[in-house]
Every structure is written in C-alpha cells, then in structure tokens.
Amino acid sequence: MAQWDGKSRGAVLGYKIFIFFIHNLGLRSAYFILYFVAFYFLLFSFKGTRANFYYFHKRLGFSKFKSIFKVYRSYCIFGQTIIDKVAISSGLRDKFTYEFDGVDILKRLLKNKDGGILISAHIGNFEIAEYFFNEIDDLSQINLVTTDNEHQAIKEYMETVSSKSSLKIILVKEDLSHIFEINNALQNNELICFTGDRYFEGNKILSQELLGKEAMFPAGTFLLGSRLKVPVAFVYVMKETSNHYHLYTREAKFEARNAQDLLKSYTESIDWILNKYPYQWFNYFDFWAEQK
Amino acid sequence: MEKSIIINKINHFLEDEFEVDADEIQPEANLKETLDLDSLDYVDLVVSVESNFSVKLDAEDFVEIITLQNFYDLIDEKVN
Image (cartoon, rainbow over all chains, first blue to last red; front, side):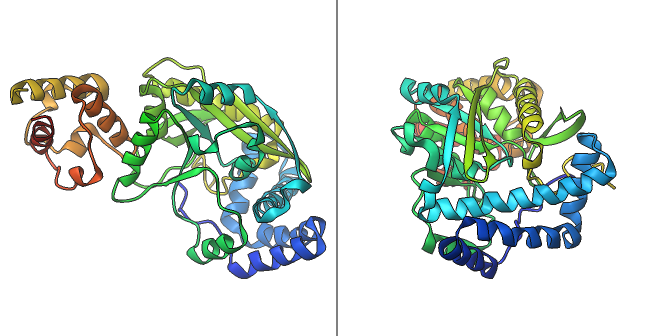
C-alpha cells in the first residue's frame, strides 16, 4: 500500500557533522559533502531511489537514463533543503533571500480573522516558511499540525542548536488532544496548516489523479477543509538557487462540502508546482503504488 | 432541553454533516465506526456539537464514548 512508514532517515552524527561544516566552513562546504551522501543514498536507499526513479520516469516521462541522474540531483537538492533548514534555524537566516508570491492572500486571511486552512505538501522546504514570514505580523496565529515522527535523538539535538519556532505546533496524538487544539485555534480564528500528501495506516483516504495517475491522499484534511466554512489556501516554499527561496500561496477554489473537489484543486496545484520544480518532490516512498 | 430533542438534533447533524444513513443511526451503534471517523473527523464532530448546543467538549469527554447512546448521554449531561 502506498503509505509513508512514518520515519525519516538520518542519524545525530550526520547532523552534527553538517552543522560543524555549516558554521565553520560555510554552506558551500556542506553542500559539497552532499554530493557523496546523495550518491550513497542513490545506491543504498533502494526504496527511495526506486520511488523517485518511478516519479521521474513514469510520471514525468523522462528516459530511464535521464531519470537516474535526476534521482541523484533530487537527493542533492533534498539534502540542500535540510542543510538550509539547519542553517537558517541555527542563526544563518541572513545568508538567504526570498520572494513571496501570494503574500497578500496570507495577509488577508490573517487580517480578516475568520480563521482558515493552509495545505502544503512534502515538496520544497515548507518547514523554513516561518523564517521568511517577515511581512507577517503575527505568526502566533498560524498553527502547524504535524506528527511526532522525527527520531527523538535528532530532535533533542536540533533543539539545542535551533531557535524556538514562532509558529504554534499541534502534534497529532493517540489521545485526540490535537482535535481540541485544532478546534480552539479555529474558534480563535487562527490559521491551521496541514500537509495533504501523506497518510498512515488507519487513516481514511481519498483517491485523485496526480501527474496523470490515481494516488491516495489522507481524507481528513480535505474533509475538514471542505466542511468548515473557512477559506483554504495552498502554500509552498521552493528552493530556487543555493541561497534563494520562492514562497507561494494560492487560494483553493472548490465546491463547499465537496472534499473530492478540494482534493482535485490540491492535486492540480501540486501538478503545477512540480512542473516548475520537478526536483523538489520529496515523497521517497511508493506514492502511486505501481512501482513494482 | 429535553433529551429527545437533543437526540433528534444530533441525529439530524449526523445525517446532514457526516452523510450517515438514518437507519444506521442506532443508540447501540459504535460511534467511530458508524461515522467512519478518523482522527481529524473528530474536529468536525466537536465543531458540530459546539455550534448546535453551545457547549464545550474536552479530550477527556471522549474517553468513555463508544456507542451513540454514550454520545447522546454526554451531550445531554453537558447541555443540562
């Protein structure tokens, strides 16, 4: 089944090495190490490589030969986004520039104080969005709903070197406490941000075409977004050059109370952004369940 | 508010908001299974209860809710 197994790869030592290089020898040196790390992943992360090869070859239509190189490049860019995240959150925000396409939509949502739902994806580098929200006055109005799947040791280490997030984090937990945090945030007319592209065993799912082939998505985000009478927008943070990011916000157009229509609007938006940034699809698992 | 009115109101929004067939809404039915709830759907349920009855629900309220009857009893207790 095409679902994420809930764990990201990595080890504390790897993070420590990269942070040492970033702070002592600069970003470029950390990027340089990535060429070797990406090669290692290309060879030994069989599932991830196979999944991304399928994405480039079958979904984007590149030849087998080109797709191998594109998988390698995708690993490099993925690694760069992680390095950027570590660098920015540990005080090197000034090394990066950005432009914000659709900031007016986000500002309007916050100004109207009617609440709203933001839906992102594992594309680009959404986790650093808050560091580029200089133009947004009140980040405390934005709540990020996330699962607590990062390796505990990595999380503890990163907390020691990172600045505290200005966004409010709502962790999805077994005890359903997140439901009440989400509800409270909505009652306070705040924005709730979800990712709409990964689901876990036990989640309800919806199917919709993405890049010309049916894929499964978590139903909850789209049911909620379509039923609540609040605006919905899609948000992405895409890497353009080694030190420049492009943020996008797009208002979702869909029929009220029609989760499938909202999902369709989402997948069309993902199609559009992946056509612009094909290397920044970071779902390294069997997304379309057709790769075997 | 009389309990029968509460039950009717709940059944009405379950049919309307959660698209549950009327004949599936039985007191002994399992709430989670009947409504096919996953974790985010509970937000809808909580929002619906709060907008229909102006009462606030907490995480602890759901600990012992298994059947629709448990749910009716909870809302009745909160409202009255």
